[in-house]
Length: 414
Image: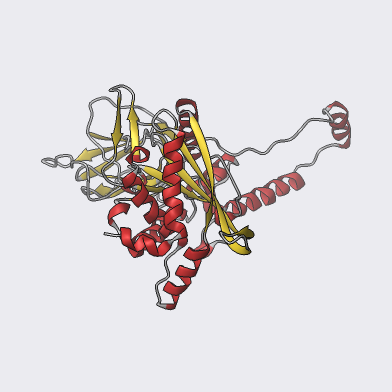
């Protein structure tokens, strides 16, 4: 008998939520066949079969949160069928191995084959309100169920219950007299999954790293003009792609900000490659996809990969490799309207740069003339254990110089 367990797939994962089963008890399965969808702290992953055999018993209910190491289901393997090794080709998949001791858990009460189009967070909201999400009508794209659909269903359901129950008038009067008139009502949202992971990581970063923030203004006028010239040549490169490429150049010159502090061994480890994390806002919460080897890629490639990763983040389709291994992180909050912030470092990195709103302002130029320029605020947050303020200012000035003179950037490309 093989027991399929939830395993840590990286980034300090401690638990996961069972979203749906792709098989039922008695089904015949083959090696690498998807068995169950699990929502981890950062992504949805498929757990696959380690061997050929028959699903013997499903041990965990849909919707339950289980810790790493919990047995989810058992498989009676075919004679001579050895468990498969970890499927490295399928990034984001969770492996399973046979063990000797079973963990007995309650059998599912729901139809394990029932699948609907809904984000993990939407499913969690449904569970919190005791809603069978399969009964909710989806109004999103392609029939996808949204949080608003679930809340609408709850309102209609509870309204129906109110009308169906008849309460005697004397009972109503008594309840009005005894009920506290000033009692405050609350709505709740679940604090687990990605939201809980974000909280843990932010707390770890803030309480471990002595944060220092350096603020600067960057003149974006020439870069915006340069982008218009590129557009006229059918080359649409986003401003953020320029930020990433310029930072990759600056990080090679100031590698202390592309580093991680190893306190136990009393060394600062300088990264040889720049793996740029991109803070992305998604329905389930903040997530940081990674453009690997940004220092070795062209602006065109960086632009394309950034668009692909951002879209996958919104759809909750990022793999483990795509959200791990960053050496420096950016937060491009300007398009949302931010004019300033003091971001928290993506632990265990050393630095993070945030880009805020660009707006036209009157500026006095070198000829003492007042001109209108496009100015952006930036925040450079760094770990003061690893780097000092002077180095942070020099690093930011290098970034500023290349952004304000984008044609000089061409001289730095390899």
